[in-house]
Length: 255
Image (spheres, rainbow, N blue to C red):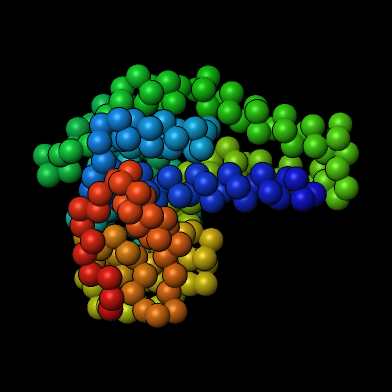
């Protein structure tokens, strides 16, 4: 059982880190700068750890910028206030994202500047065969641990975790946008309905401080109150101290 739980939470938190670090804070908000070589390395690692649910940074960044511009209006790609359930919201978001990836629609100029683009990797990572291969590897690992290794406590019940592995990026995004715009508390009176969705934020590396983030979208540190913890922030600060990246938009760090 321990093997499967370690694998699940490792996949969850490592993929989530690259989600918040590379896709959100770097690609979407340009809070960080990095050299072209370092960008390629983090781009590759984002694909590797998101695996079967890899989100193309170019399309993600455009959609997230739209989310901030139109937050909780009908033009918001993923406001929970226009859908009956989270699945319907995810499908709507998926259609917008798919059109951006396939270039069936083109973003307004204000959303299309300074996007990380690596066409070869993005096309490979977005290919069905690549996604299915990752999903197969996750499944084979679970089957090996449960039925061949027969690890203590590793029952077939754990196979129910596999759909989360397959869709880990969209699941994380849906949790942030559904919870972070419906439930929790508000530090600021913003025009939208964003909230700080604690205590679930502990599992989302600071991403659920949506009210803080929408009030201070330039702030690299998402937590504002003394009791709020943005686990991704100190790691990014460490990267900066080591000279791996530079912080371009520190923004407001306190409430």
